[in-house]
Length: 454
Image 1 (cartoon, rainbow, N blue to C red):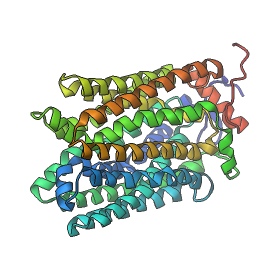
Image 2 (image 1 turned 120 degrees about the horizontal axis):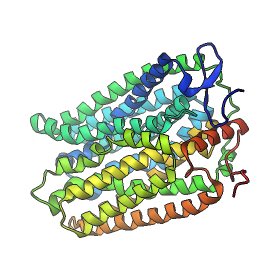
Image 3 (image 1 turned 90 degrees about the vertical axis):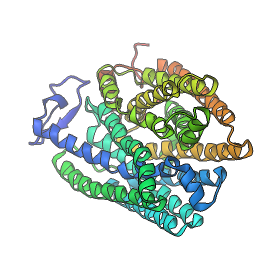
């Protein structure tokens, strides 16, 4: 072919191949239309995930519970996903397929939230736990489907980092909007009605999922390069490279100090800084995720994903150190946390196609979310127990977050040394595109770079 080796090939309308940037405008517009609905399918799930955290005092009063039982509303979401989300990725790859899987998971999310809302109306704590658990059965697997959609639609393109960053920024708008609207709805109406509003956002995501399924069917017909892969075998997991397993660990060590912290952030911030607007502060990490597309655009141009990941990991540690051990305005720590979140999300998830072939992406993303949820579930319970026993002394929990974040920094340093040899995820953008192309041609994960220049 008369193209450069590092230039991603995508099909034209006539089925011929040419570099991605030579595609007609309507092809780019179609992909970005798809990206809009890829973003929207998780808007509802991100909105409802932190509904309890948006008005913790209201929830505890509604069900007559304390911090330990309050945190169970998060753990029952995360614990099933230590296993289910992995099989969700496997089912996407080998059983349901991406479209049917996304629809099933979207239905689970909406059903779980409806049960949670009913529990609020009836003031039944056990039903709230059941609803959150059903939501969990679909929520993380839906995120796996979203990541797989994004990787499928933008695989090999020069704007893949940007696309992943947009999905993060847009989806997290749901989380940020929740922190602002849920307390206001509860104040104007009541706690149960605020929970019911979350079910409406899930309905919006369900409609978006139906539209995305239709668009994806059109994309598959146009993309004549799509090949029917053999089903993924669970034994394929053992072929995942060491770097990917370390990235799984890095994800856990980064997202635990973020997500578990946000669960209790409103109470913590209101306790240490009683004059602040805790609702606004707690939502800052999600609002500051807005620059994620800009960061993704920069990474698309320069590459070096691992460098950005390391900076984000350091930022998370610094943010918690500031919040735990200083009395500097909390806005500083929260903004650093949010910018670190935006940077990590724009850089880490797009490393997967450089480490495993596309037919195993659902399984790889499923494993990543499974480990992440295991960490979040365990630490959430630990933090809840500590807060209950120490009468909400948040210094202990913050010290745990600092320790976890610092271990995360160490893992990134190890990854840097490994990548000096494998040259997979800390390389220029053009080299990574060529690597992704080669991996999918060979249909095997990268074990070690076979270039002879080292």
